[in-house]
Length: 359
Image (cartoon, rainbow, N blue to C red; front, side):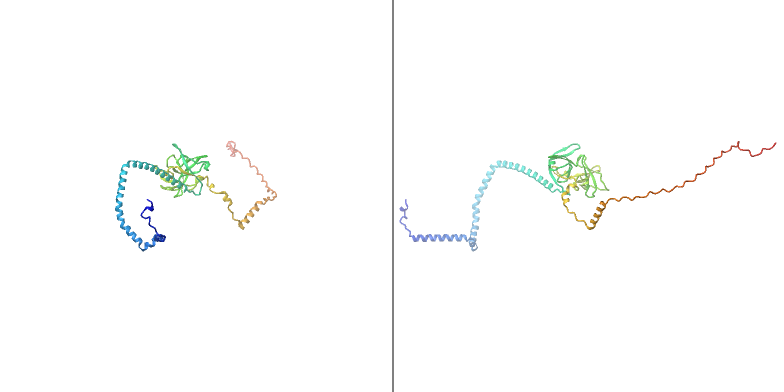
């Protein structure tokens, strides 16, 4: 049915009335917008209070109406969990296995990170450059105790360089190739390390015998060591820098002094090789030559000039001397010859001085 055939086909609105009605509708819409935009002001005047009262009154009814829906949802979840418990259990077990693997890897990485940090904090006195390395092979025998490291001559490693872990001294380099090196442990029978007792400054020689605790020999001083003393490298001979931590003094069952090494506290996997040959390597020759020498004082300059003049003067010739006559020696008078000794007369040859009686 068309609009002109309906009951409103004869309805005709005047144009003025239509305009007035549209204007009134627009004014009402504008008032609504203004009121909605000024809600913060109306909230102070009581609009918000009324809304809160209505919401507070409807809250219990909302909870009552919401309860069946909530109960139904919980029941459906319980039934679904019961039917899918087996599959969910399998899924959770697989996830636990994955998480355990990640946990083990995280623990291992944390331990490695802590050891790296300890190695980075390692300092020597005097400061010496160092190279990080990893133990890739353990060479053991009835008397030998050495390790192979993955850093060699290409990294600046030389024979004699000390090797340290994050806990203490490990040994020294005894063999080098371009990309590997061999470290002789403190426990090897060929190892000899000069050490000192930190408490008494007494010197000793740490001698390896193939066991875990090397011996202390040639201890000098009166009562220089007691159990629990800290051992450090003494620096004697220039083999090691002074003050590197070695271990703690202990006494074995036979009463001999030995050392519990600090390096035995953790596995010797990561080490630092100190690029230290002697104490001269810690001094920069260029820096020494660039140091300004203070000028000489007047007295020092005069002494220097006098010394140079004496050194440049020719040596004085000795004066000619007249030959001296030797004093005349008076001849000694000749001694008269001694009279020859008379031979003794025997009684038979001696003259008879007594007259014989006349007959």
